Image (tube, rainbow, N blue to C red; front, side, top):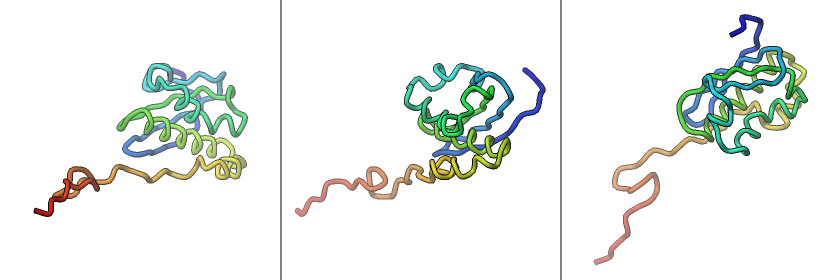
Length: 131
């Protein structure tokens, strides 16, 4: 692994946390030591994950090294997307308006609602019987 200068960004989504490093390079992406297709098999999620690079036209300018933990594939892609967007801001702050208008800097705060006592799930109640 190269020890050159990198740009760091931290992204979060649901229970996932992604630590993203951008190195100058040719567009290689490594997620937890594997290829993106192995870690996140759905093409739509990979496209969502790389959205900040598409918006800023920097798709083949960086090698990306990602460490992500917690949650599942959807959470991972959202966390990675936010992490890449924040790392791009460290690289060049002029990207802020493009990333902000695309909604890539805002943390998606939606998380699973907790289960309440007496209910089957967060809101689903057992069937009501009158008699």
